[in-house]
Image 1 (cartoon, one colour):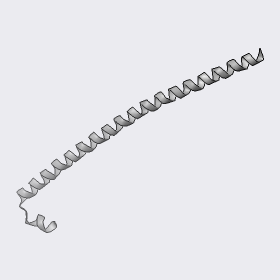
Image 2 (image 1 turned 90 degrees about the horizontal axis):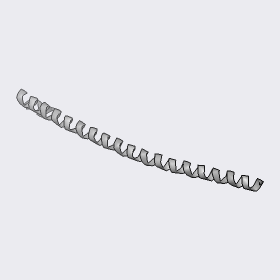
Image 3 (image 1 turned 60 degrees about the vertical axis):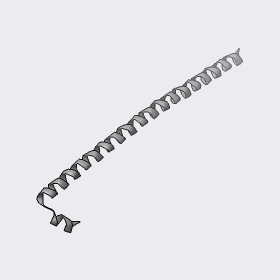
Image 4 (image 1 turned 120 degrees about the vertical axis):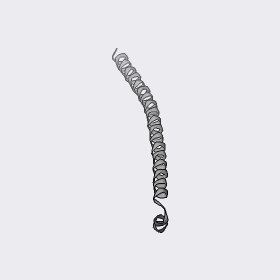
Length: 76
């Protein structure tokens, strides 16, 4: 590759650099898009996990209320 570069004119080298920079910009844009989508998925998953945790907490609260009521009944 280095030997090939030596044979290119300055104009061709500039063109190659511009193409490479354009390609790099496209690759960075694609990576940013993928990162943003991954973050969105994680946020969606977080919302699901939070709802699940709320349901679990509600179940525990209901169970504790039941135990307290049963304890009160057994004392009576």
